[in-house]
Length: 303
Image (cartoon, rainbow, N blue to C red; front, top):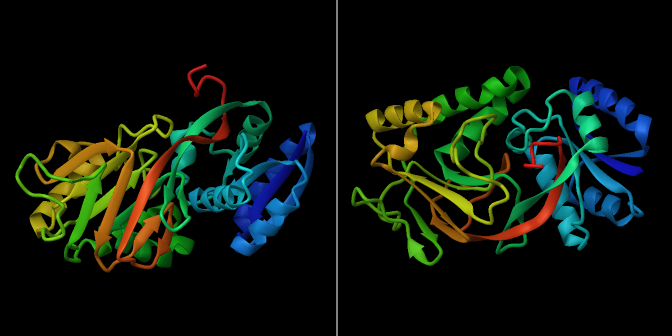
């Protein structure tokens, strides 16, 4: 077996130590080449020269998303990809049942089975492997990014607490051609202030927060979560319900599934697989069923 391990050139010493543990295991069963990359141009060069090697991503959701995007651009999104979770949140890895221990995760790369997964492709050529969201979650991620080096995964809830004082955004959310409308009477029509809107392939964001608790990354559908909990009391109640996994039952929350989602309006940008993107007037995501696959532990794919 020939493997190409793609790692983040800017990883800290702790990640380098964990990567070394994974490489020790991978080298027991494969011929391993390591490529350290820093940006999309690096990734494109690495993908162009992989020479048939199977790709292994050492990193979190953002790293996986970036590598998948590079393979997609090259028309080489064949699989399965190997994933050694080295990020802060590792939400997709958690949804797939991938081991957190880098050595055990490396063993899964060698011995696991391929699980087909959906991909969210946007109208600007980008991809999403786990989730993209607008609203308070973006501000929370922005705050968390400032704190992540010192606090690790704890940075996410701290960032959310700081961002919780911000007002809502006037977002318009359309799923499969219809504006999202709540049974309680409000709608995501661009006039109603919203706390957030999320388009989810996987169930969690921010290191384990179950925004779309029933999302299945291989069911051919995106789970869309929209909240209008913008008042101070409503925001606090939503946060508590979110932590307990009870937010889908609230009157100021809508959860639905679809194959095409458009979000427009707002000025706060997007959080796509943990990476912060500038605001755009509108963006549309379409589900590409079974577009890629990841090696997962035997049994976690239903076999």
